[in-house]
Length: 167
Image (cartoon, rainbow, N blue to C red; front, side, top):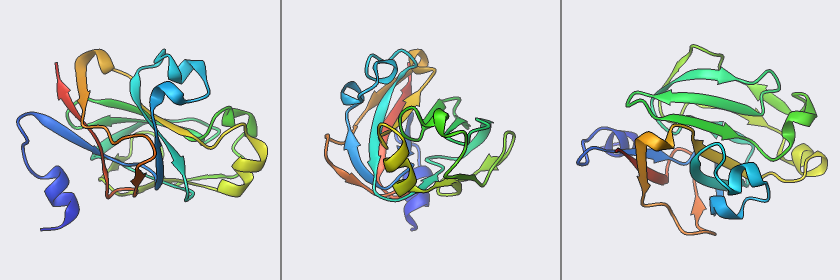
């Protein structure tokens, strides 16, 4: 059985599994050096310090929005979970430079599909941080569990990031 089928194909007592959207190391959301994320003003989640410049769909979803600057993407999963993937911090100021979008609003994506590619070296040189928060924006409707410990290495589309269960 393939990983995605194993990860996304079964019913695990109402838990929906969300895979890592990037390859890198886990950063606890409370340790993201931006208060909007660390204080969970936009929602709860986790962050990844990327080691590769590629964002993949962490679940089967619809692309709800992709910012004109391509630094952030909003997804809505088949179960209703809404995710915001925000590549780096203050990257909106890059005005799209260093980013290539492979999807647009309204697209249906499968877990593992490439959403955005970015020049990691360019972002390192031109933004305060490459840390990428992955936020459940409708967190009031879900309980998140089984998050990897800070510093854990994760692989895009291959490592489970957390489980989300409807409240």
